[in-house]
Length: 163
Image 1: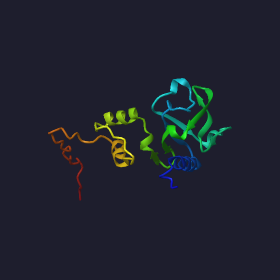
Image 2: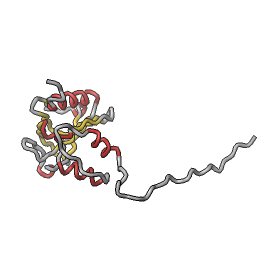
Image 3: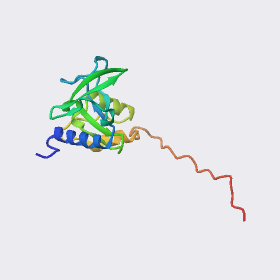
Image 4: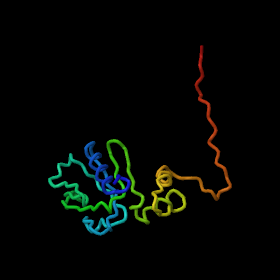
């Protein structure tokens, strides 16, 4: 079975590899079954930083998911993050970001589409990576507008070469 056929294995390998480099952020739907986080953080998009440098006494990455004691507002709390809840992993060190489109909550997709003025993404069996990259890249032109924005004119500098 390849990692594309088993996203859990791919998520696990990506997270482990990213943690070897340094601080890593996991993006998850904290409302999913099995997720253990403080009650006030149970929302569609929760981003948590993980790092071996935090010297976590109990960081465990298994076939189930991730468990670790983290600090929230100065208080320690042991979180539980099943793989099914994690839809993104990003490395603070390399800048790489891995997304798992089929696990992204509908509300997160709709919010991103609204922010970037694009039609909401549909769910399909095949991930629509290209569309997600466009959303992440920035605003797209609205197909319904008739105006053309022209770039500002190039201004010449006030300095000149004197020989």
